[in-house]
Amino acid sequence: SAVISQKPSRDICQRGTSLTIQCQVDSQVTMMFWYRQQPGQSLTLIATANQGSEATYESGFVIDKFPISRPNLTFSTLTVSNMSPEDSSIYLCSVEEALSRSQVPNEQFFGPGTRLTVL
Amino acid sequence: QKEVEQNSGPLSVPEGAIASLNCTYSDRGSQSFFWYRQYSGKSPELIMFIYSNGDKEDGRFTAQLNKASQYVSLLIRDSQPSDSATYLCAVNSYYTGGFKTIFGAGTRLFVKA
Figure 1: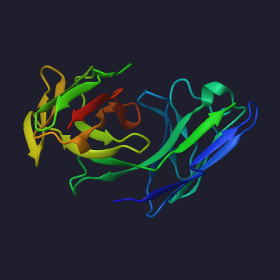
Figure 2: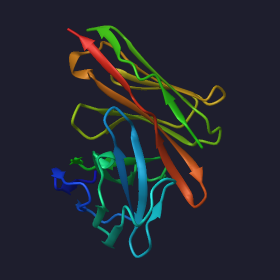
Figure 3: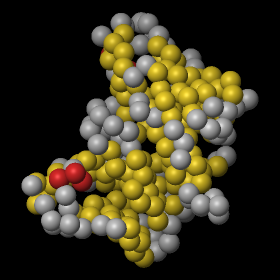
């Protein structure tokens, strides 16, 4: 199973600043996903990052606010730009691996998360 | 908008009892169904998946799927205090461009010693 690390594990930031979160996987993966989990809420998909192409953003999330890089098959970054207190959340990256050779279905593995507090 | 609905709980059961967690989904074309466990302050981890109608058992856990009713459940037998966590139901559905996993809001389970 994939092992995922994220940096930083937590940060406290001032309103109007930006934070870049790094996600490193121990194996090559085609797609990486960025999620947000606000307190007491479920996981909300922000975007899907494919290596060598633009990230695909979900409704309500835009590239100017959450720019993503995916320079190779083991690494991705998510930037939270021009932060406000509403951006306070846990940000998780994840990857998919096939549960079996038949490829159906895929299991998602999650990184440890980055806990962001915006003052 | 394709949705996954769960009772947020908390669901409280005594140690040794059966905990029953339920989930409904809106997309009749959904392919695969997952239960993730998330301990407080930790990331979700997969505990069960199912993609055929009926029951699937793994140790103390049983996943049940009824596609006609668009309903999936998780039973935890002989519940232990260590089972206390939030359980996320996730459904894999087809969207333009490929499949996507949608998560429910989760059900908090407390197992009392």
